[in-house]
Length: 137
Image (cartoon, rainbow, N blue to C red; front, side, top):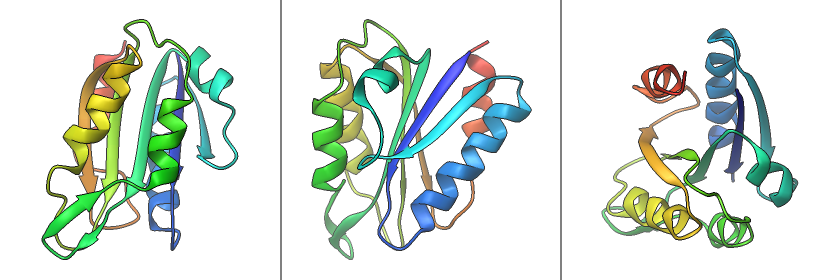
């Protein structure tokens, strides 16, 4: 299975988390690509067997948390995902608010079946991501 992981990172934390997630994908025997939303090819991501999209959390400490505009614009540029398994993730410092459900909703509007939602406070793979990968087999 080919898993495309796409992220937007301001300080490198989200990039590092995405790379750690890709290591788990490969350890489970799948192939995986990691790209920033600025560099990823929407057609190639849409063609993957499963998709994971992540962003750092923007907001005011405990309110107005949201994904970056670049992340949401990338999702809007994807082709029809036709029920493909997908996940969303974010890195954050204080709180994530409704950020992950909004990201999931946007992916679902492209036809994805969002079955994973993850958050990480640092540059590591989020808790539960390995279980999501195992569910793809």
